[in-house]
Length: 551
Length: 58
Image (tube, rainbow over all chains, first blue to last red; front, top):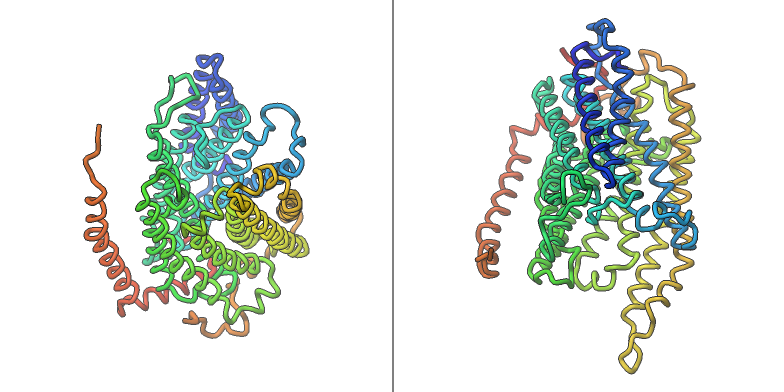
């Protein structure tokens, strides 16, 4: 892969790595006694581990000009392997935590494996490690094919992909060391945040450069969603992480915000992370891969445009629904609640658009587990957005907030929507990227699908029950006006649901591991695609004559 | 530092400028999506991705 870089790109890569190694060395040496020293050392080791192979190829001849006749897919390939690796790791930690909630003694006893430290390892690993790599890998794939143009250079995609993974590594190892700024889903400290800003700006510029060079006159709607994801995540990340470090040699920082302003900023960030990281980017994935795999154009292109603007406009205002019945002014809570309800319209427009696209291709959904992943993702997208709007109503939230219902809702979205669409997109792209006829084992894809679906259903049903029981127990009064149950009573009552949740999670994890195995077998052993097959349009032979949107 | 923006000011802004912003933006988007001359472009764009010619145009 390094020999595919041009000589100047190799020199550029080496320069970046050397600068990183020096910065890492500086923090490692100067940050004595502070956890930042360990991170400095980690940055240095990672930079050197990449610098040596680059040095080994520094004076190799220039790559052949033939490369410009193909798309640049190496970063997408590595990104997809990383997506599966993060899925296995982060879902394993998640299920470990689920069993810890059944039996709290199931830790190693040392600080790194306490619930409080592993919980952000799970959330960051899944959202950023698994989801982020899936988004970056598929966005490179989709932007090239929808623009009919090769990536503008070969260095910046690697910088984005590997730089982003360094951020994830700093985040996850930091939590285990006890480094956190205690903002949910934004736990990494100031230096990791600054690094992500650099990576993200390069990502945005790379996307713009590719679009500027495009051969297709129209920018396909999937790119709009990917762009919204990149742009808004940058904005959210910068504002929410505004902080002053204690010193430049300390991992600790203090947020610029305090009190209720801090809470509002955090949940403006938090809910828009759901909106633009976990929704907009994955909608981009859906609007590309679902039509391709079904062999039919999207049901209504107009509806996809209207729901795009609906989602980007409405989501901005809904964060305050996380702060119902708090010190936040009532009218701000009402604003969040109202926009959450209106948001159902563009959300369901997208879900319906996906499902209506499948009209005329339902036989494919039956036969093809990859397309079924995408179909189920659209169903869960519809279910979860309905549930989210419902839970944002203040009186419903009075019952659901602080209970496991919220956790169940999040997992309906993360497992049912985000993970399903990602696995679908990956199973669609992997054979195309590695020039294979198909995934090595269709059985393993089927197995993964059914494990994922049954795991999600068990998980979500368990926590719906758990959450509603908790909420009701906390608000049941005796005749004398005392609370009928202690908090501990409600914890004990959760045991059967927590066992069911941990089993559901285990099924989902097993499915992801089956996917990892299948990925390995496909890359290593699957039969190569014949040229004719790889260029064959994925159209239905029966309806091949004229394919038109069903609208 | 105190912020001299009262609740009433924000409500006034939300009910005038905010409402107009929402309505005008919605109108522009609906016009863009439904403008007759743009329909061919949208139809072509949604069908073009199905063409699996797997190499850049240059």
